[in-house]
Amino acid sequence: MLTKIISKTLLITFMLTLCIAPSIPGSEKSAAPPSKTTSTPKTTSPLKLTIGVVLPLSGPISPTGNGWARVYKLYFDKLNEKGGIKVDNQSYIVNLVVEDGKTNFEAARTATTKLVHVSGAKFVFGEIMESATQGIYDVTSAGGALHIISWINIPNHEADVNIKKPLCIRFSISPEDSIPVLLDDLVKTFPNVRTMVNCSPKIGYDPIDNLLVKMAKDRGINVIAREQWEWGTTDFLPVYTRVLAHKPDAIFAMVSAQAHSQLLAARQLGYKGTFLSSSPKGPEEFIRVAGIDACNDVITAGWDGNNPPTRILKEISQLWTKAYGNEPLLSGTV
Image (tube, rainbow, N blue to C red; front, side):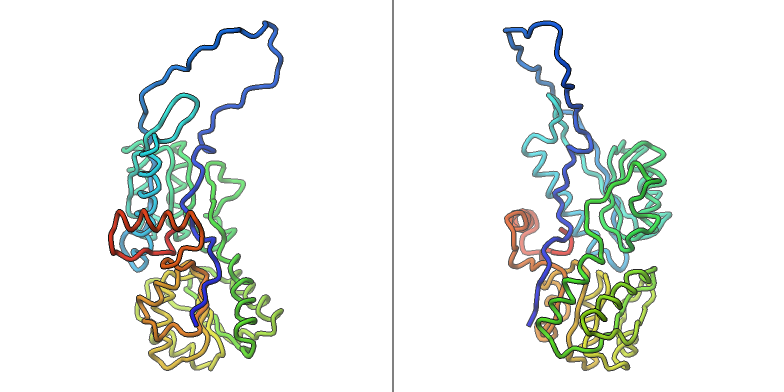
């Protein structure tokens, strides 16, 4: 039984007009009587507004990075078809430029330097990994551009939004937001689960891991072990050999774009228990990578790309199909 429980993943429907909103007229009374004649606002030709995107287009999570890049393009293409972004009487046609952040500080910093100082980007989206995210802000803040964080793995990390970063905003949810929903669904659907192993990458997930332990305990589930894997891992068989040695009732794969590969490894090693993933990867990606037979008793925080649950997600799915044909929609990218 493949269970999909959260549909509030990374929706690329951010309100850019908030970032460049026109001033609001004051409420002062005018000394002169209002004119009886009204003038028609002068229309002007659209201007170009360059928006940059820095995502991992290469490396172990490049499928997610490239998927996100495509969704950004779909969104801004649609916006441009409607005349672009309008502020007062001026329209702006978006020129989207995408660069590879490679999930590391130096690559993201170099990519952002190119976007801000060569392409003239006023807004930059990105990245996924904290080190790369910090590399982006180092450049955007100095260049007066706005940094919009696409995703954060570790809430309250120095790379996240904070009072010291006035030119940085984030619209996406935090990874810990899905934990109580996943656990509640686990308790409801699999009431006999009593033990769990948390499997997470070594990138500083300690605060979220501690939160998982507490929330699970509150629901009568004991997190008996935490197994970590090195960033860049692609072969998860050794990792899950260690995980299964604890003989857990359930496995929690914490915030990983490679969760489907982890599920495949667990099933190949004979694990038949419940598997939870707090990644925004959707059910269709688990089926595509691990196979339908591996996807029994799986709970994932992603929405089902084959069955969009909302009007906006249906529209995105239609745009994806129109642009990319039969290439599978990566639900975890939108």
